Image 1 (tube, rainbow, N blue to C red):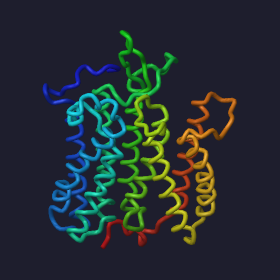
Image 2: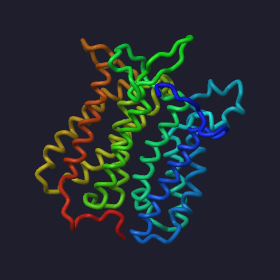
Image 3: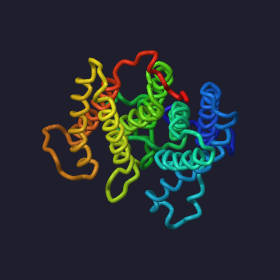
Length: 326
């Protein structure tokens, strides 16, 4: 299992495309169930999918091709070979949000409500789609030298110079993180969230916090001017959501608020060296190996961000749960 037996479910259907389609179908099914519960017009989600799916795939591909143009410069036509891999989730999410905005404006429905309904299914689809990277032998991490770590699914074997080298399976780490985010959203959305948009905001911060750390170990990150684009976007997204909740929840009386504000402040302080690291600006000296120091810094920011988010949000009385209500 450390090396996939085949890239194809049944030739010529690749696992990569099959898993993306299955993930999208499952996300639509989950959202359609919520559509009925919250009282949206019938087939709203199905109609929305006709907007989001093509634009999302186009955006994911364009994002990847733009930041990997050297791979396609000599053969531009290969940029349309989506089945060979090369979809960047951030490009798909940004294009998908644009499609949702246009759809909601035309149909006169709440964009925040739609985003809340879609968020759990989207992150579950992301968890499934990452396994497409396994079958395509991509999205893997740094080489592993400790034999105790060389086992599947923590690691995978990648051919290099005639031999198979064990690499950290970053696709698996992100898939596991995404699935954990999915469980969190599903368990909390009907008993915790107080306002429209909160499910989506939690998704943004939780996903970004995990991606920020995992991206550090990937061997095939997308770069722009030497900057890991996904790390920069993850940091900005996490900080934006954290600041939003700090401002919103500041005056709300709850015992956890003070600790939440303290941790959030620590997270924002850590965001400064994280940003400098992401932009490759020298900012710290450490006796630790560079990779370890950076990983600890990123993990520290992500951990404090997630903890402070839940502490800031505090307890929610049943009467305050207003998720997806009109």
